Image 1 (cartoon, rainbow, N blue to C red):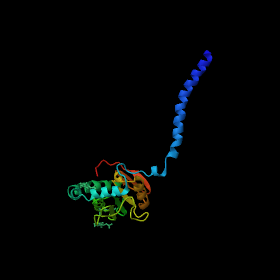
Image 2 (tube, rainbow, N blue to C red):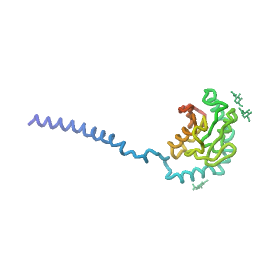
Image 3 (cartoon, rainbow, N blue to C red):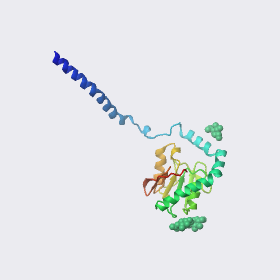
Image 4 (tube, protein in one colour):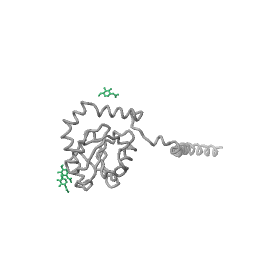
Amino acid sequence: MRQSKTILKYLFVSLSLTLPLIFFISLQLRKPSLTTEKDLIRIRPGYTSYDYYIQRQLNKTLNPRLRTIWMTRDWDRKIRVFSKFFQDLKRQNLLSNSSKCLCVGARVGQEVEALKRVGVNDSVGIDLVPYPPLVVKGDFHHQPFDDETFDFEFSNVFDHALYPDKFVGEIERVGEAIPTIGGGSCTKGRWIRVGYRGRF
Ligand SMILES: *[C@@H]1O[C@H](CO)[C@@H](O)[C@H](O)[C@H]1NC(C)=O
Ligand SMILES: *[C@@H]1O[C@H](CO)[C@@H](O)[C@H](O)[C@H]1NC(C)=O
Ligand SMILES: *[C@@H]1O[C@H](CO)[C@@H](O)[C@H](O)[C@H]1NC(C)=O
């Protein structure tokens, strides 16, 4: 009697240890089948649709008060910071005067101006709102360029992407080499993180 009680006790203890484990493992095994195609296309939190996102971005980009700040108070300061950053990349041979460059989400194009000032003349920006001649109209989720049009792309607006996967995919498609995302940089088909303390 005592022996069977002991066996029961051990059985109970071992079950209480293994059941949660089995439960946990079964949850892990079920996870992949719960991940649908839809889950993989992640959308930026706070937005319900592409149209709503575009409307919000346009609203901000066209805000007259902000545009004035970008073109006056921010203009010289940002060009100075961007120029220093691009000079650093040139020193590391990640960028040269003959590079063909695209600046993604460039707004009024301070980074494009900076590239030109450091001698990288073949540079242009895209944004939802164009600012000629530095910035042409284009959505970074669907870059309006053929594959491998550029050999360097720069962006510090990764955090503005509605679909981060599309943002990255388009840079990889259009840029033969890949560049900068908020302080990261990349070239010749590989992403390179470049630590950078300056504020863009
Ligand atoms: C657009 O921005 C203005 C401020 O510039 C704000 O008052 C307005 O509510 C915004 N509209 C939408 C649809 O987001
Ligand atoms: C690149 O362009 C800058 C600015 O025009 C110039 O000072 C520099 O000498 C050029 N570098 C090379 C390697 O041609
Ligand atoms: C780049 O543009 C600057 C200014 O317009 C010019 O002085 C320079 O010669 C150009 N460089 C090349 C390689 O075309």
